[in-house]
Image 1 (cartoon, one colour):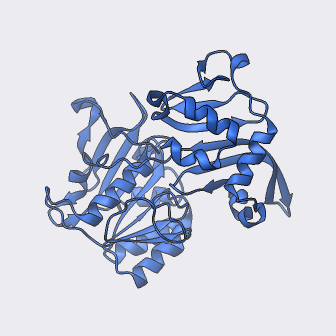
Image 2 (cartoon, rainbow, N blue to C red):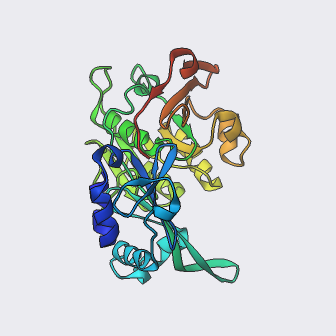
Length: 330
């Protein structure tokens, strides 16, 4: 998947990553580029320093040190030399490019009337590599389907545990149908606020999200969920990273309309999430049918637990059955 980000890398960095051994390259989940500091690649739960000849080094003195020109070229390539056109993305602190890769940025904030107006002097960039892993949700799907009913589910996961990759594969399979279970394909409505699930380009998905999926790309979750309810008659609505009050209200609206919801939230378990405003109310009032909990221990992408919410039954626990790794990227 690294090859898909070469077009947005400055020539010097692209050449370095082309030289990295395939065994290392396929494990890279993030690339961190910081002005005047060593080039870092993240592999699961560890990071490595990249040397001048693409070798792994332990001492930062021998690593490739990114220069301001690297960052300037990178941002120009991402924005197609039109930073003004990407002003909204800069205010959000990230871009999403073709393939669903998220580019986080940091630098000097420009404030106006107490609000972030823009970022300038970008000094740090984090490239999060999106991966399509067909079949990574295989172990989860049996817990989401009860006869002909699709269970409304909340995927709970710390950052960098593969929840978006898992969510995407769930979408693909329930949209196309899983005939071995059996599970007929259903109409799936996706609200892809950050363009990470379907990775649309000009409104057309570049990821495999199944044949019965409709996408609202770049649309705020709450607005998008209500639009899908009224216009697209989905069987299930899928979105990523709930957080705001209006998100929780839209989930309620969908569930009251008889539409299943599959979504995600950052956290370690349902108890932690239950203490948060808005989303915690959905937990306490038992709006979901299933909690799917991912973890990064013993390694990234571990399916930790599956809980049936109605009677608090633990349907799956890696502590009892052994860890199952979903082999997900981001």
